[in-house]
Image (cartoon, rainbow, N blue to C red):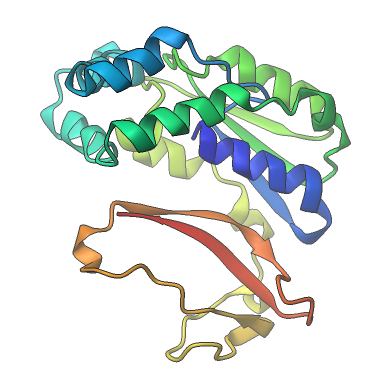
Length: 220
């Protein structure tokens, strides 16, 4: 979402030949941020967290305590990191390069997303050749938390998967996995129960040796 989608978009633009497909969820090719948002993050982080529910969660879901708790659990980085996150979004602009993407892409948006409106996804889907666009109803910017079943059901990856493509994790750093994949042990320190989640950014040949590696970012 948002900046994570910007990273995925960057990978599709600059390393699309290494990717079979990509999913761009609740993001845009340009992610301008109101200066007042960054100022609030810096000056009154608790107020920002209150606003996060108001602007990132659809109004129909704001009374759901479990959804709100899960959304707030994604915002534990503190004001400095969060402000820099929003500054990075504000500086991001890939609009001139999006049309160069020739990888299969699924664009996801949410009906009540006020942070990255559906029109952002409309533009991406219209500009990327052959892109599919699915809009999740009953959700805002945090649609993976608000409507996880609908969000996951929108994926087209099952259509691409074949038995030879299945990847199975194995123990040991650098060990080979099935189907020619490898895994590097770059797991963050600490109790895994403290992890907030993981974003898979792509599958790349990082070492240039023909072995594909899953590139992921852990949140904790």
